[in-house]
Length: 164
Image (tube, rainbow, N blue to C red; front, side, top):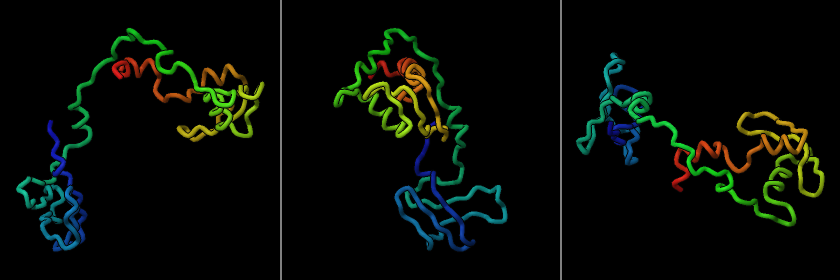
């Protein structure tokens, strides 16, 4: 299915005689009277007379129609995947690696460390869920907090990251 970007006009109607049309090229306005919608029949598609001859009838495809036209592919094999290939080492800054510094920053005043760098417990605000999360051990922090990626790395690998 080919989509025609010119068919996506925003046309709120103010009255039968006057409408506002915002077209892809940015032209149109409150005094544009090219709108020919029948207000008595809401089932009748509205039409905007195009200056370039493009059919602009209100027959836009639904998002579900567009999605159903996409080819769905399965995962590729994990062949060649190595976790260490994505990020070999965190850079070190003033004796602490960048991951440790980010954890200290995000945990803020709740961060407890076993030395200058290693956060062993604390709480932080998790923006994706809108909740506060608390951790009581370095192991728990290491397993549950991924600060270098949002998508699982093996999933990214199988869906095309191996080609980057």
